[in-house]
Length: 278
Image (cartoon, rainbow, N blue to C red):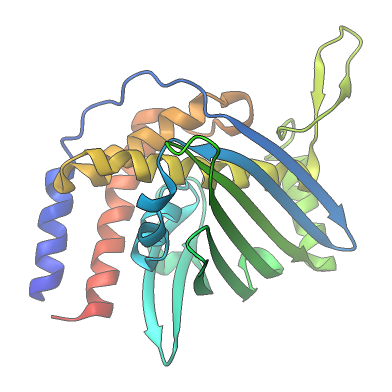
């Protein structure tokens, strides 16, 4: 085994002893979505409880982004590669249960980060083709200093286009497996005066946008942990954050999710080591 792969796997193995994450207060966020002409978009405005200056270099690092997106339960692995002048994130997407990367759907996202006068950081991930017949994927993160210098304002935009065939397949999914799944936008009230929430494609993209937002929070919170412990700690943190929105985001019990991520993150370390080489 190459030395880089061995070191990564040893680091990962040490993280498996991560303890459960303490009780967490809800994360402040504002969620919006739209669906027009085959394009679905979800937007989040939120806050990170970290100063802006400390985040600029962090989010300009593609390795950090692979660590973030890999927390999503449907992401089986993520590796970053450099080809020519462009950095790419190779994201492996699959079912919510454990899946080897080679059995997942692969999409490559071009990675770009730019800073404006030290007062705004914009990170953009774009892919011509995404999983399950979707295309024109764009994930955009904008970070700016908040009025309180201890915080950073975050805007996260996630959008893609859905072809006619993909829409038909997604509609079957939404009417069967995801029947009853809801998003975060309130669309009205039921007969009892309880809020009714958006469903369908808008509900789907809202759920995934919030999952990625919470992955950002979990990754940052993991910087307080020793590196060997941080890998699985972040996964546990992400799960506990999502359970604060269990009505929208619950899919697996905690032990099942963490067992899956132990194996998937180990596979990710192996893939990244192969890219880096000995």
